[in-house]
Amino acid sequence: IGLPGATADGLLRLSNQDAATPLAICYTSGTTGRPKGAVIDQFTASLRAFMLMYDLRLGPDDVMHMTTPMFHISCLMLSLAALQRGAAQLILPQFDYESTMAAVRQHNVTFINTVPTILSMALARDDFTPDVLAGLRLIMYTAAPMSLPLLRKLMAVYQGDLVQFLGQTEDLPQTVLTPEDHHNALAGIAPGRLESIGLPSAGVELAICDDAGDPVPRGEIGEIVTRAGAAMSGYWNLPEETAATFRDGWIHTGDLGYRDADGYIYLAGRKKHMIIRGGENVYPSEVEPVLLEAPGVRDAVILGLPDETWGEIVVAAVVTENNDGDGEAIIAHCKQHLASYRCPERIYFVDEMPLNAAGKVLRHLLLEKIAAST
Image (cartoon, rainbow, N blue to C red):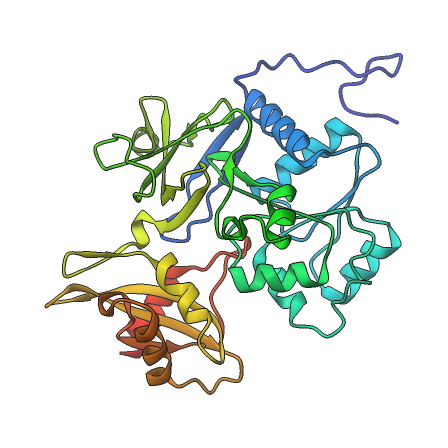
């Protein structure tokens, strides 16, 4: 068939590249600033694919579909995992609910990789019913944790397996919330774990440290740091950023979190997203779930704005169900459930959240929009 590199007898010559040869340069999401190119070598890509293949129990009878763009790091690694396992892949030009679900049924898709944003859009439709999902054995969600109300809503219409993988372009996967964790929660066994990001993935060492790099006690918030063979080689042409991220063999993720008594990890937000109001630390992950429970609120993001008195103040960008939100009522709702310093002092209503291709909120664009409106 005239493949490049084929010999006269039609056989392909094996590449002579070694394990350290770069396979891809995958750019970070850039939700807080400029994206950086993470160099993924041959060994790292193979190991990541094997880790996913193992944790997802991929088999040659699986048919996989990914609703997110193929340049996303999880899609690249899942494609390699499918190739290693002999599973089929359904690749579509873009996500469109009607055509995607029709193709999923037509090709007997067994496994979907998606993000909470797309699941939220699907769950808002009347035709997203158990019958639509009947052929699936597994839904994997990545890129960002799913809110507890959204997760419970999904579990009400889908009785198959759910798995959550979280990680970064620099080091993926880092944690996994397994199908067993989801089913146990649905049965009333440790339901609080649905709010976690699970346990460290196979082969991943994970610690939670203070600013000095020392481990913090369980239950205390610190930075999540990881060490694994599946980490990137470094950032492309950015030695200073590489040195800041890699310290003593550990990747400093910039994510804040804590461990419970059973070892499950809970996110508290990004280090860069933490708000310091009058010396008190405010974590978006503590406030946003409360906002989402306020009547009429569909989506919410907590941000910090500079303030001469407090250093920073807490504000919220909110998307409402019918574009008719009451800011004072939302703040009053928060005051019923949160300490006063954690409550947003201002509510900014937006038509929609600015998202990147992976479905993550671009907070810097929200801040620019808020600055332009004040």
